[in-house]
Length: 147
Ligand SMILES: [Zn+2]
Image (tube, protein in one colour):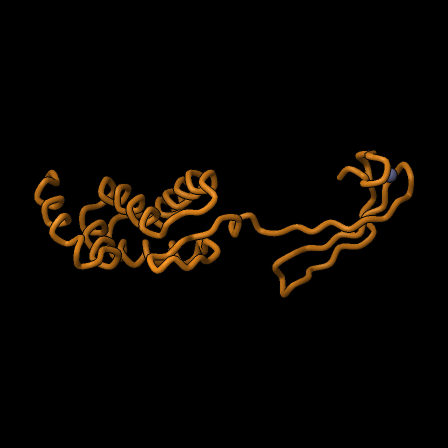
């Protein structure tokens, strides 16, 4: 970590502590060149974009929430936990680039992927995610699906 005083890049960690109920790690460091002491924090990266909900409110993206919705749709289907995690990883990589994401957009992206993975999981997820106005369009979409 570069020293804020002299910009030297080597330092010694004097103290490491878990803080904020386990959400962060705080390190006291000392520059190897000038002896200056400074503090750094580490956080989990997955809270770094926000989700805008249908009513306009925003909340930090929560991977667990998305994961549990997808897993519910995939229950007793031949889709492994690893395949689901991989799908969510891929989705996150796309979404990190966008900053703020609409919840509708996340739902649509999940549906696109489930549609290719498993038709039953796709229909289940859609029935939870879509509102009544989308149902007509959805019925058309199902009729266009390959056997
Ligand atoms: Zn220094």
